[in-house]
Length: 144
Image 1 (spheres, one colour):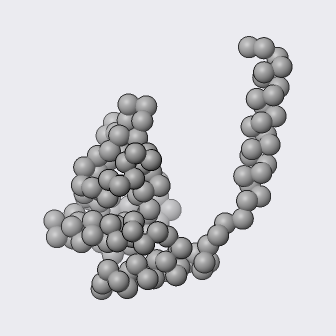
Image 2 (cartoon, one colour; image 1 turned 180 degrees about the vertical axis):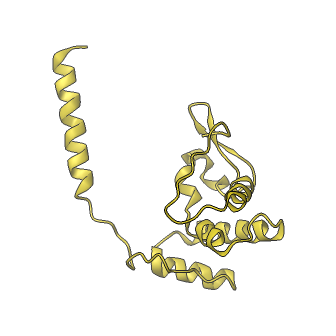
C-alpha cells in the first residue's frame, strides 16, 4: 500500500467519525424504555409513531399490517416482543431496491450473498428464546 493513500484514507476515516459523532438526532420525543405504541388500531399506531418517532407513515402502515399478520399466525405472543417489532424500522435494514418489500413475509437479499431473515421467523425465534432486556442474541447461519 502506498503511504500517501494510507494517510489520506486514515484522515478521511478520522474526519468522518468526528463529524458523525457530533451530528444531532432529530427525535421528536425523548426515548423511554416504558413507551408502548398503541396496539388497538392502525391509525392510532401510525399517529403515535409519527408524533414520537418521526417515522414515515407509509412504512408504519406496512409495519402495522405485518404486525397483524404475525398476531394472526401466532408468531408473536409476548407484549415486549410485540413492542420490539412495532418499534423496529425493518426498512432501515434492507437494500434500497428492497424498500418496497421490507415488510413482506420472506427473507430479502441485503447484498454480499446474505439475507435478512423474514419477520415471521424472527418473531417466532425471539418469542421462543424469551429474550430479556439487557441480553444479546447472535443469529448465526440463518442469513445475515
